[in-house]
Length: 199
Image: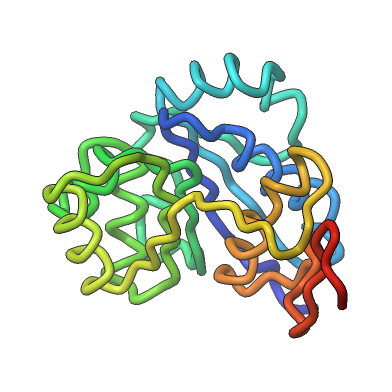
C-alpha cells in the first residue's frame, strides 16, 4: 500500500476563513479515500478571523494534526519530511511578503520556504483588494520562485446557488492546483448555464 500524500493547509488572518473551511470540509470527508494526510497550521490572527467568520472550533471539527504558528518543530518545517504540497488559504499580503523575502519568521513562512526550495507545489490564495505595487511585486517574486498565486476571486459562470457553492468556485480550483480530484463545482463545458441563459 502506498503512503498517503502529505499536504499542509495554512490559514492566515485575511478575511476569507470560509474558503479554508470549505477546503478542510472536503479533506475531512475525502482524505482517507483519496490517500491524503492533511496537516493544518493557523496563525494567531487566522484563528481570530476563523472564530469571527466561521464560528467553529477547528480542533473539534477536523481530525487533522494542527500546529501553533511558532512551532518550528512541526514536521513540515523540514524538506526531509516529504510533504508534497501546501496551500495558504486565505493568504494575507503580509504572508506573501514574508514568503517572497524568504523570511521564515513563523511556521507558515518557513513551511512555504520549504516548498519552494524543494520545488514542491505551493498555492497562495491571496485575499486582498486593491493591490499595491508592493503586493504585485511580491506576487511576481513568489511566482518566479515557483508558487501559484490564486486570488480568492469567485466565478459565476457555473451559476452557483448560495454562498457555499460560490466559495467552491474558488476552492475547487485550489484543490485542482494541489492535484486533488474533486467535484465541488460545475465545470465549464462550453454551454452557458446561468439564470435566463439558453444552453
